[in-house]
Image 1 (cartoon, helix red, strand yellow):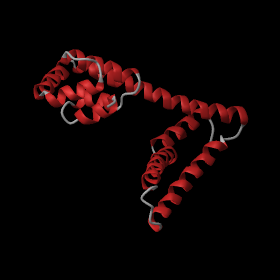
Image 2: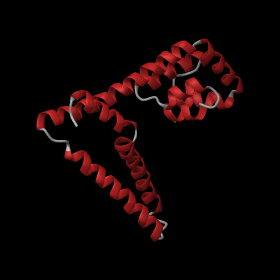
Image 3: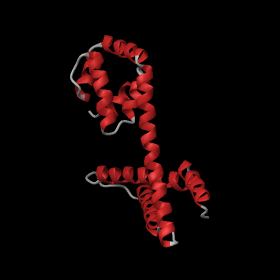
Image 4: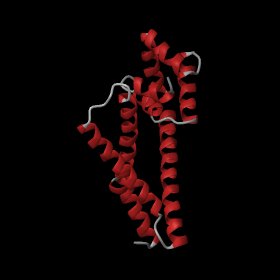
Length: 177
């Protein structure tokens, strides 16, 4: 088990800690894991924490109590995590602006990749709706389709979601159309 899966399994019981872990990558997961393991007095390991919470019903109560006592520190961690995510998005926006300023053109690779992902998504969707799969390849096809669903969702979010409005604001601020 990793920190993200641990977060998903406990978010209903300890929402602040579970939410932090569910979105944890890298050092954030380890930091929150350190906090949980010190609160419970066990090893800093996602598997060990999960097993301890499963085997010990009082551990959830102890974790809830700890969460309430340290809510401000946990909220600071959540804020720092979101701030890092937003800096990453801003970095992508700055890259796009830099390419347009340097070349005078949009990055065509972004659009080609988006068309390929969209075509692949609808192609496999049509294939799955019209063709029965052999038992031996069913898992592989569904795994590929799951990856395409994730990529397609990202493409749609970029071009039509909050990222799109962010890109439009960035273009307006930089004087581009």
